[in-house]
Length: 464
Image (cartoon, rainbow, N blue to C red; front, side):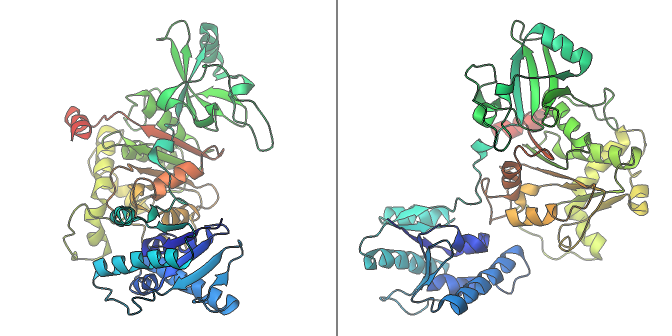
């Protein structure tokens, strides 16, 4: 039986194409949602862009399919209708959000009653409104199409139990060929899942029990747990290869744990075009990305420029407008980047806390916001997007599609520290990108779990 899906405003503002995501079911948009969308159409933000796109899509459907009040047929076989409740046809003030929420929810109840008891689901990303709907007897769900539960994201690191001779050979030759049953199948290729517990279990084990492209691997001696080796699975060669992390570190920065060793290896490999680094505060995400980017850009000359950016999203209450030109306005937002650069150049080969000023003047290093990235083409550049958890999936798509030939993009962030009120740990662009690119040969993902900033920072991250 077809279901009725009644959509809240935040669904359309999050994904304008949500009206096409419900297969052959009925999609109902309350008239109050249309009025709320109208309040955002003049904004220059992502939310405003989505509001305008929703209006255009609905107008196209109206022109092609007829009256939206009677309903139009979608290409998926579904049915779209704009509903006006009979008991309350007047529109409440958009300023009164509580009244608007109540009117939208009331519409969902009237749709259910008018359709002879057909299963009706109220879809909203507003947690409080879902609770209210459930308490009143309405089935309520969140929008799942672009959501990735944090538990689904594997760590990017797995363990493989091998013999002592295999580890010794790996150290000598720098490669190890795992059994075919542990390798993720190619498209159209059928390989049975491993029937033994040779692959790691628990949080570190890969989904579906397979090795996937660019997954970091810890080879462990099954007879001696302390006898280990670090490697990365190369899907092209179908082998586990040794890490290419320099023994002396990068710009004075040396990995302090195995996850950082894996991360630095991924950041330095120009064959991997997209890296997602996820971790709590103090795990070294930004510092490692900057160190690797400076080495590959300035020292090795692989990239023409390193572009560092982060979303302009305040923590807590905003202080309002800032004086000065563009550079002066952006300085408070970009200060975390400059702090890390000062540390690198103070501890690395180039002494002096402001030694990076030469790179800024020459154009090899550029620090800017994401505001003006749309429409640009960025070839042969090392791009780092810090605090990417505050971006929507569409914004991340916009950034990644800017990459030209030879460009590498690094997304860093912590899905548990989100300042953007319109995304959460499951719907932010960083989590979605990590999940969608899983297993691609040009992409890699890793989770950093151990804080290395200081003993106090690590303690605060765990206990507060």
